[in-house]
Length: 113
Image (tube, rainbow, N blue to C red):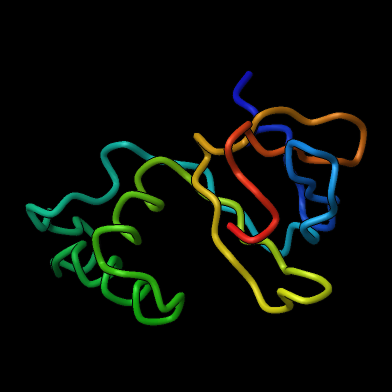
């Protein structure tokens, strides 16, 4: 089972060194075929799927290529606490493990990621 499949809103998020990063505010499972830079057509609306990427990039304030990748592989939105209050987005491949109600980030990531 992928780590992201064990994540839920409200979980504590910690860096590899155990320092608290914040709490899971939102998450999205990945869908490798959901969005591509080729601009697939949405079968329901007939519009380009690329607009989903653009909307997410705008609302998350992430570069378009980052937003596209996160939508494709899945992400966790972390509501930060302390000095780095606000939020950040972590790709599903940056998640190490879940222990109880705590999500651990992979080695090499820090609380200021």
